[in-house]
Image (cartoon, rainbow, N blue to C red; front, side, top):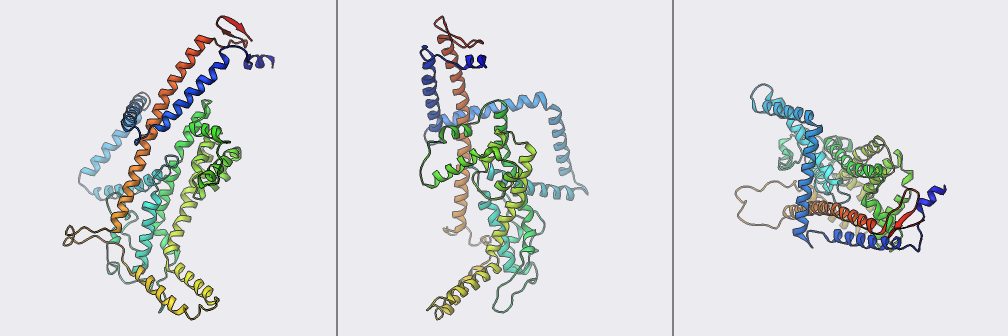
Length: 451
């Protein structure tokens, strides 16, 4: 015990001990400020140059690692890809099967990649559910209600993809045949939820699988930092700012929720991770970081995340959108409104006229076909400010913002590595000039030993 105390004790009056903390603290503060100011808007040239250097260093490191450790794996991968390309190019009875497999592979990779893009990046990911999966489910539900049947797809992979739209989106209802679900007089078409859900379930689960995979990088980075005895930057910021953030705004409330989760991180287990993953929340990235930092086993973290995101949360969101657009929900809301307004004095006389207007608006909305392509005769004759153009603009702006954040974050991390080297040199220089601790707990200052 005495030996431990002698190692930790520093004499307050000794010159050099009190000088280290202010110097290092000032340097750390300056370095943090430099990283925060390094953005594409403030220093575009420096940010892009650091991003380029980081990319080159990353590719060089991975190339050396692959050549040293994964030579056989790379050889087998190249062999499999070559065989697959040969099967695809050479004609034969297998051609149809190969194309079908490639369609399924492309479909799966597309939706999984969208899920990864949605959850990766510590909150800076693309909101691909709002951009792609949500509208896809909504369009399919509207088309099913409009045509009175759910067998619209030619195959499970008949969905929106990178440059292609689903085949059913632009078809007329007569192309699918007579309606299988008809409406009663004075009622809307009713299609059970259990009939619509299976036709959009596969892409939704694949998207959820991607969101679960996108949560792994924060876990692995934090896990590696924990095993090396250090903390990642996100954890350091919580330690530094845990007592300094006060306020009543939304940002302050979110910070308070993060600090609460951080303070209860020792209680994380399969059940709590499953609950956090099953509901949409902006704090799950932090949960992944803490699971890695505090040694939660990988399979416990991943299985809870996979079940919560790919099964529970995905189905909650999908069912919500279907019910939001389904006529059954509209009729239920209409009945509740009639009951509420029927008990309000003076509203009984106005209620029939109000319901008639609501019916006309509702029928106009539901009878509007899903947007189709513009005919070649009118295409290019005039430019129109359409909703599609606005939506595409929003998507491109979000893509630009997403890649800008990637560039900025990569450049800042590379700058942090350079700053760490500079900090180590400063510490080494300080130790040479002012002395260093010895194994028995003493240190030398200007040639004089002290304890």
